[in-house]
Image (cartoon, rainbow, N blue to C red; front, side, top):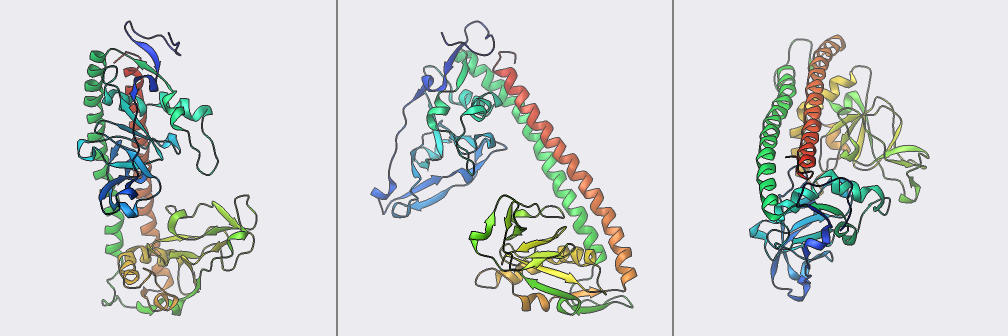
Length: 398
């Protein structure tokens, strides 16, 4: 009998996952070039709830090379790249016979020994992912495990009737967690609306009449605009040589960017305090540079002159983002040009008025940030609760 890390209740036993699985099959959709199939790749999984939320219908002749694994209703698909992200889902009946990526291990329960839902909950537990991430992952850019690594994980196996009881109990508890998540999502929307409401209260609509002492100006009149330019890829590095390099919105945070890549031969440089704006899809998102950095063609740096407070500009661009996005959507490449930016109108009050309004918006932003932190802590607590439920379930304590 296989030994495990803890004592199991009577009637339970330790087995390898593969011992309770059936063989799976492959199919090459390109051999039926005129037939459509539904394709499930890793991006189709919502890892928070463990469901397939988006699929692609593809003609056989256009099938990706990774579209090869056949899935059946009740299969568990387990992403082998970065297994700690838990891109794991149970295949629903409407996807029976379709195709998933070779980036998944397909786990097909032998129902003489295991219930599919039991294996699904087990695979989403830290008990399984810890076995895989402890010593099995290979690679640095895309750390991954193999199908055999997954099949060789050790699992506690109760009798079928006990599995069904555990599935029902875990399902009921997880439904409560999902309800809390739903309420939290509503609270998040309300939090975002709080800042939007404050911006709408402060800023006039483009072209509207302005208070005395305010005037409409073009962005090019009050800002230097530096369009990004991507340096040769041979100058990129991950070791911190040169300046941090930002290509687009991917590295934006709530206010400042987070470096991932550096460039030893920057072409266009933003200074600390420059407002950075995404000029390629998605257009209009903004951040503030808090250090000198190299910017690629997906960004532009806006350098306010003396008459313009940078955070006034930042907040107004937040307010204007939907309009900027529409400007980008009208171009071939969903982008805006330097001329587009130069001709954007912004309201310009006296500097003291700008600073007073910025101080008010800062207070609102701090409240929003505090609410977001609380919501993030709630999500972390929910994840811990989920794992506590699963841990109890697979020790026979639920």
